[in-house]
Length: 335
Ligand SMILES: O=C(O)CCC(=O)C(=O)O
Ligand SMILES: [Fe+2]
Image 1 (tube, rainbow, N blue to C red):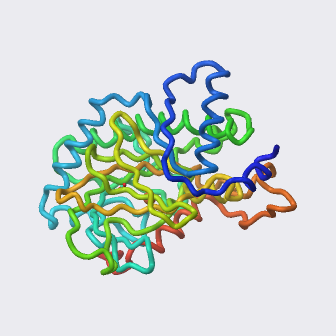
Image 2: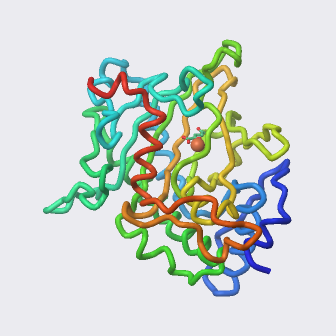
């Protein structure tokens, strides 16, 4: 059965999120078995947890501490490295600086955004020159000490996981395993570290941690702070399903670039985060896309007479840039 035919029989009425152990992927048979589980998860839920991802606990612990120290700084200090909405969006994003859901008034979190950078900068560092409108340097704060190193160490470890996943996604789509390799050379992966203050007010006042949205790139690798429930996914019955942190796992979700590329065979599931835990929460998503100029156009295996192409072709990076401009308030863009 083609992917387009299989997708016709899928409902999206999930009430739980699969956990996939990616620790055994050394033989072609193991990878084929994993790809089948991943295909199922991407078609039915659009989210899954991965266990045995291989990122050392020490790397995670260090970025967690660095993020905690960064967000404890006074807001005036963080504002010195405010992102520019007319630039590449790297830097500090203040509370209510974004609004992903137009019915809301703003998102109740602050963040810091950065993209690819070598830990030891290359002599002729091109600052992601191939990255179209997203090109340019990261905007690191001068404190806390070790913030850049902790963030970049985790970033590179997570990009490594992303590359393994791209191989498995290719197999899941009946493509050669290396199909995405020449489309992900410049590592168009950007990371946000996020701080959600506890939310005490009513939910219907138009402000929640992060409003209902789908992600923009191919997929997201999300680390959530242990023991704090905030993330929720919307199923096709319009019910919110909780995605609690599970020790030793990361959350993977399909984003809109992949949904467009697969003609919605892979599901880009709407989600939100509401922190009602009574204490602050941190999370770290890495948004993994393709190189800027890759054309995202529904794949032939995902198109059929019953499932005609739903999307116009678009350059991957132009699509991201447009979406970012929509969600970040322009009133902070000239500061
Ligand atoms: O913090 C979370 O759990 C979700 C974050 C998220 O959805 C995003 O940044 O796109
Ligand atoms: Fe998201």
